[in-house]
Amino acid sequence: MDRAGVGEMAEALATPRMDQEFGTVLDHATGAVLNAQTFEAPYPLILFRDFFPAEFYQRLLDRFPANDRFVQLNGEGTRRQYNLYDERVEPGSEEGRTAWSIVRRVLSSPEIALALRSKLDAGFRIRAKGSREGWPIPMFPRPVLYADLDGYAIKPHPDTRRKVLTMQIYLPADDTQRDLGTTIYKISPMGVFAWKSYGLTKDKTLPFLPNTGYAFVVIHPAYSLLKSSWHGREAISVPVEKPRLSILNTYYREPEKADA
Image (cartoon, rainbow, N blue to C red):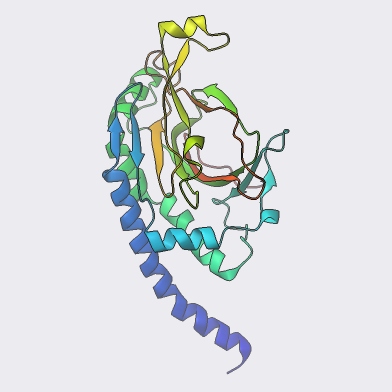
């Protein structure tokens, strides 16, 4: 048998194993969402743990895309991204390609979308009432890997109305970065006394712990002033060799436009 034939046979044998692992990871991740802790204030929010199976999570950290696979995102040079939703990008190794392909398929699956709709039904109803987008509100996933470097920060914001749901999965190797999580804000009379606070005060900061994450429906102030999905992150301090790693799986109102 020639080399091409050997390669085709190896691919054929690998596909069932990959599909089986995809099913295992999908079931685990869906369960994590359905069993997530739910908060109703200051706006509907879920906090989930053990999103990926433990062994698979470690494989992701061991097969993280190479630095040169990321692109610079902001002018300050503090955030880099790797577009998981783009099947054309390569992480730099065959093992990494297999693992991150499973992540892309899981996060783009209807099962995860349905689980999020179920757990965040209250948020969808608040948004639908204010936006009049119809029911169910359409949403299209776009998962992206982020590496946040020293000095990264993002001021409090509710997210653009083009986004329907925001989901972030934290990817640290240990619990030493627990203070680097996203901060949730609430509208408060006390906020008027703070300069440039938008009338907001901190409600809670979600711990940046391994294999955990959160999700919420994007509720713009135009849809509900008191239940707006304000969140942000003060400037982080991290060594260059240990950036803040996460997956942001954002669901948009419109699908990604294909390249011309």
